[in-house]
Length: 414
View 1: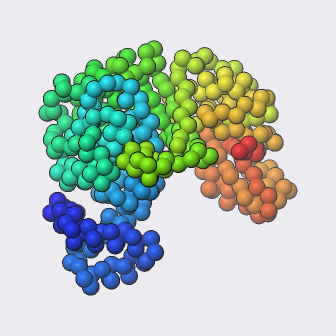
View 2: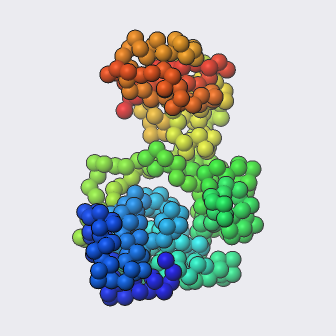
View 3: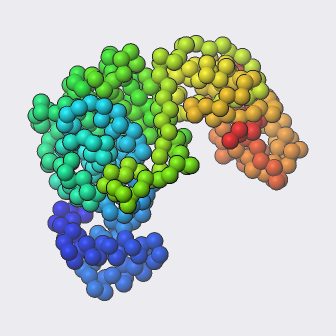
């Protein structure tokens, strides 16, 4: 889609077509829907409307359904947009600062929306004309025009002095796809370092090398319902004093009442509330004992592992490491925690395929989950080799214990 097609799609006739495509997409075959719509509308416009309907359908994975049904997207813009729950968490931290905010490289406006809903006066900057137009449409569609605006400009050329805080989401994609090299960021890494000398928050890839994080900057890894989504670097007044690393675990609160959109649809942050659980290096003793498997096994969340806070979880669970280089913890204490998934250990076996196959057969295991860490094993291939065929279920954890390949049979605690 180009700018001209977007403008046609947002004309009165185009909006009527888009509303029909969005409404019918979930209940009608896409090919049949396209055929029907092309009888009365231009083919190029129908294709654009169907693309929007398809992306709106996918977008419920990142945005509240009511928001997704009204927003506009590009394929790249959707894929690069921050999940609403993560953006809401980050906006709540930024909202502790007073004054106007600047959102550089705002994309289709995911963070911009959350910043405005958090009560900030925010200006978004986006260099790509089509993407900037879509961000403006999203701000308008969600009723946030009084607090947010979008300018089409080069992020590196914007005067930042009128703004109290700055956020930035550098592009981490090249012509070959997603890049994990900070030196491939756009705007460039030196520009990012300039921002981090101010009161700012910069989104980065979760795999950012530790030695590239500047001194005095807080690095936060964020996990949402068990998936590590991104990392953020916090500087100046936005960073917590004395904190170098933070693992933030967002967990859906299924019991909480959803936001009442009919009361204030513009400022409802998302489809469900999240509890926010944080662990920092201030909670970390830095070391843990090494020992054999006990009664329970704890698998730290990915954000904990990325932030280097595994020994902090060992302290929380009264546990120890199975191996000094492996992120598995064992304990004799039942200690439910949002920072790790717990298992009750039922058996400890040597890593011997023949013995494992007999173990699976004798226990009638048909549903077999295989986890691995620190051992050169392909779980799908091992599962086929073990030939599970029964009615029971089991989890096998293939890892190292004191340097030796070991299999731990365990039952998830929840």
